[in-house]
Image (cartoon, rainbow, N blue to C red; front, side):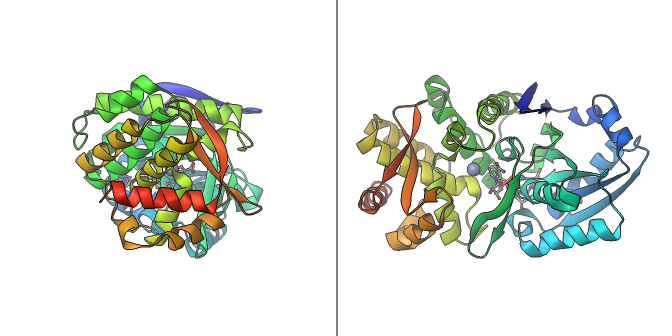
Amino acid sequence: GKLTVAVRDHQYNVHIGQDTYELFTTEYAELLGTVDRIAIIADERVAAIYLPLLQKSLQSVNCEISVKTVPAGESCKTSAVYVDCLSFLLNEKFTRDSLLIAFGGGACGDLTGFVAATFMRGIRYLQCPTTILAHDSAVGGKTAINMPEGKNMVGSFHQPVGVLFNTRLFESLPPREIRSGMAELLKHALISNEEWTLELLSTPSFSQPSIEWLSRELLRGIEVKAKIVSEDEFEHSTRKYLNFGHTFGHAVEGVCGFGGLSHGESVMIGMVYSLILSEDTGAVDEALTIRFIQFANTHGYTFQPVHEHGFDVFMNYMEKDKKVSFGKLNFVLLDGIGKPYVKELSKAQCEQAFNQLRQRTK
Ligand code: NAD
Ligand code: ZN
């Protein structure tokens, strides 16, 4: 599958399938022929399994290719790793005509994108995502690293020159990472399409999904994301909808310590929280929330963090969120499936929903 993301004067393709790396010698051959150097910034766990595969796919490229491995997963999104990557590029004499390739999940993609956005005021980069969740993160050009004060606090918008999703690499994904990615897919369904949402909610098991099924579903998710990003690259309006479940979800991630709970697992809790909020203020039926909680329980998601920590701990994080401006708490809610909107809520409303969340997930 393939689709195009169009933003302002720039457009790029997202490819998904088993043989996407062959595109290095076809669609991307021209690009690779014009760069002076390439650095693969690779998640160390991914590199340990798949680096030879990627390097082999790039063997016809004429310029020198360096590899910089970074710590696996979320632990690469630090200022220390960021600076380390910049020093690496400088020491290796990279220039404005060089290219970076992000090789890993969303964390590695966010880091690489931010390095590319800032090195020499911005160089090109390709996304080669390796997780299901990255169907979201690799598309749309949001890049970031974390700060001790909060997640994704420093970053920029910087679009890749292409996204090459190789589904063969999903084979080694642990169940937890599949679960994480499926949560974000469910989010794309929930903000866009009722039929699709109900379909996903009735998927009996996705612990070992078929590659064909996954490719099709991911393409649907990317379609939702690509459409919104094309409409609103810099998140002034509709792009905010992609944050459904994320205000509380990021708080969960923060409270559990980055990496303690995966991004998608945290967002799952955040989505249930937002559904509860939507029952009072939007047109969401309680039955949908119940269905969601059932889904979460059947597929091994956890609600433990909301039983281990009090409301104030989460509230502290939410108040630091970028979506909170001038002390106002803005949430993406649903006026029914496929009908997202933004609403300002009071602290009391948030606390009430938190108590509900606890009660219903006991
Ligand atoms: P991740 O990048 O943290 O990877 C999760 C784990 O899976 C890591 O341990 C990694 O080493 C491992 N892994 C990756 N690919 C593998 C493979 N093919 N086989 C075996 N193991 C593999 O997790 P993620 O869920 O892909 O990304 C989460 C990050 O994405 C978060 O930092 C989140 O903030 C970010 N994100 C960004 C955006 C955006 O628009 N930029 C959107 C959503 C999420
Ligand atoms: Zn997300």
